[in-house]
Image 1 (cartoon, rainbow, N blue to C red):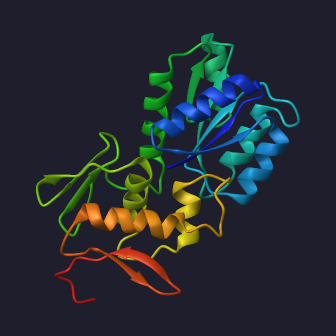
Image 2 (image 1 turned 90 degrees about the vertical axis):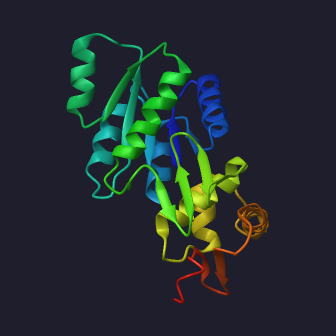
Length: 224
């Protein structure tokens, strides 16, 4: 899951980003509306955590810009104004959820995950293929009844591959979906993570590589 945090208070933005990364999400940060609009134009996000009172482009305008896109991100609007009228006006702009400051961080995490599941492109909660069952909410992975202990990035890579199956994802696709904008496109972090994931998944192998194309999950019983 890739999230954009748009918050002009840098200390709060940093806390939100690090907290969401600790939950296994790939997180980018923008500190004003102009920076956010540029990142939204370059990258695909599942959820945008959007402060309402922003410099550059106001959060209300940015929210409307996001909701005009066909394959749009879900929007969780943050604001210091928590009166019912403020919530109604925020939702009327197209925000998918609304959270007043101050808030409890665990609640924000639950709302972000719920929005990601509601996104039109999202699929069923439990992902299944090749004897693997992955639950993004509970953060659990089982293969043939065996519980696997995966790192955050290994989990993110496997989730991305299962969502795309049986299609291939390139290393660039995985960097975009699992890492954030600071990931080096020339790094070998993707093949290294794939290698660790393969070892933990065990035999028979299910993550296959096609040179120059990418990676995919393939059931060993499937000759294709």
